[in-house]
Length: 390
Image (cartoon, rainbow, N blue to C red; front, side):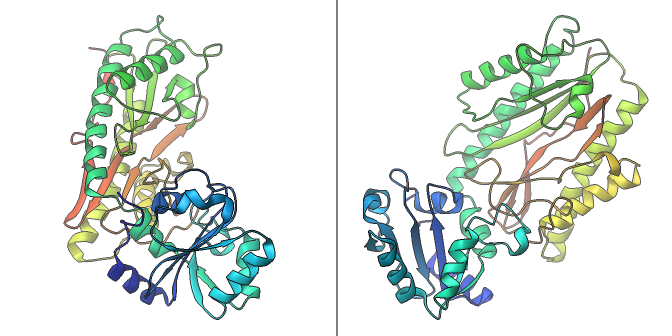
């Protein structure tokens, strides 16, 4: 997509009216604001302070240091250049004094993934008579929403990742005593590479007690060898084209019939995942606005009913946009209170987990594409039963 093509002028105007802002002021410095990077698609790095102004009416304008001319030359905005800090201050005061601007701020850092503007920048603008308000609705609608092409890329990646996960675990469950976490991780990386999947971090592979560590990182020198009758966790994520990320967690057991406790934990986790999907479907049929916090509650309430809430120590899901952990609404009423509305076009994970420290853990992760007519779950066939030794 061309720069700013994600932003429909009419929808921008309506959203700004809803939040009572004169425009959206997007700030960046050294590519620290992923919202800016996703919307502007820089040609090169932003090495100095940059301000892109998207007004409710009129054309976009940009304030940028003359060293960074190339970074935004393709955007199509009217550009004002500065060299000294005094020139920058003059431009900011002249442009934004008396205006009400939406920026990537989150009061009291309530949602860190939205809080991208340094306190000093907001302080400076306020000194010039500018009112700064959160841009949460704008970020969700324009930066976190996916294009049709990106959605197709996501669907393709999701099915490829599911196939790799199933095939890998069907082999691994029969290799007790002969394979390490690190070796399985490398197998998965090789399989993903063969299928054209790109990654930024390695997949998570945890056996037995290590599966109870949500962000366990196996190393070549310190990696557990699979034992008989152990829980196996595989979390893998990547994209093939257009950064159409897919992110899934699959579970297996290196034995025939798993113990009843393992089955109970698996079923509770799977059912919590599905409870969040059901809550979203019910809200859509009722015409109800649903937030990420509400879906987190749905999953957590089910785990509470099953007696496992105390072992679920992270949010239920995260936004996915151009980044695996995106800037849109998260399924979270635990680590944060994310009351941003989920709107058509956003993509997010649903991944409740139960982690019995020192023993074993279970996580079941799918992704959801929220469309105009309701949620679409990826992959098409999510895991419903543990993969076990034949």
